[in-house]
Length: 233
Image: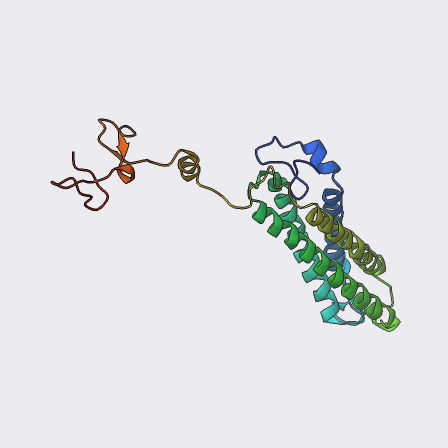
């Protein structure tokens, strides 16, 4: 795209919230953020049950504490990660350095792919533990909807994060228009000095730039003989 650098125009443009929320990767981040809330919210609220003759509550996923901890930890971490990348998406058009934009896009691709894999692991883990859970550990079948919701939205999260990685890779492939974006920052004062004419030192003039150049003069001794290429005045 002409005049674009990794999916955004030159820095300094006005922020348009309507355009921002219509972007595919923004929609996917919001969905991933919502799914993470459902996952850790379901487990935190109804993910622990006990038998009628027990006081202590256990994880609804086959009484495997690691399964509940995984869902809670990963759901909370994914929630925070979504907020960080949403903030980065808002700030991204203001980044003037092409190298910094490239790093941000590559981080988006890598982190999104990582989360897609982690939710695949979580989906398989929670599903397996739910299938082998014993009915006598939860005779009233409490929290069944919460467990199924956590499993379902873990499955959906696999694809929302994978899609974010895909769109990030597309932004990386767009690259930057080298005619409009500088790869390295250049100090304006140094750039202005480099653009001017080089200094020329001359001799025999009242002002700088007047008179005969020093390199073009010659020297003659008392007898008129050449004495080293300089002329005495």
